[in-house]
Image (cartoon, helix red, strand yellow):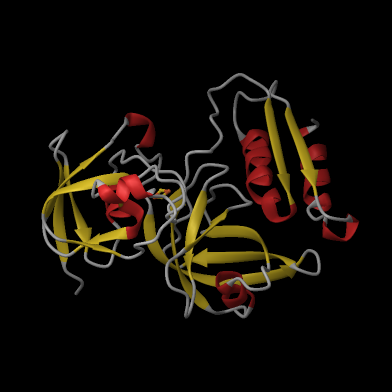
Length: 266
Ligand code: FES
């Protein structure tokens, strides 16, 4: 069994158990704590923290989320560090980061692959435990065979009761993650970790919504538009989608958007 360590946040006194193979950020989120973050993959710097006591392993020393001044001051990224002992840390926590659904790590079986363009595919995974609770616009980390670290992709569907997690993903010619993903066959299983992300639909906001994206960036827009169509009390909210691509051959999702427009009549 994987060892687990107790992590205490010095400012609040909150603590949580974090598995030795889990990132401190994700361990805290799994426990329902509002640890500050955004990208989850070392790029944004929103999850900076300091170690007060204890031993921590840094999985990505050169992560772009830290600048040289941060490094000099001993700051680390909670999404790129895992515990090697019990520890006390200093880190920003806020209510707005408390997860709507505590993220889980679970096995996802690839149930369907569909070509949308010559390099964009739709993938549908089914969770083995039936878990598929997330907010429209959120993302999950896909842990792919032979690839170090999870890759973050937005879901294109909305939370559901049948365990489905759908993604629209473009093959990046030199991208390790997408190359591994595009080699998967229906029936293959990977580990999925989610949901995460702060750019999700707020169903209590009365304003119209503007979504701008291109190529496979359609996924979160589709999820948000579907979320508005499915939400109670959002009948008067208009969704404006601005979607572009390099050429007509790179556009996808027309069918889905048309169906959505008809069903929602907006
Ligand atoms: S959440 Fe973006 S660098 Fe950690």
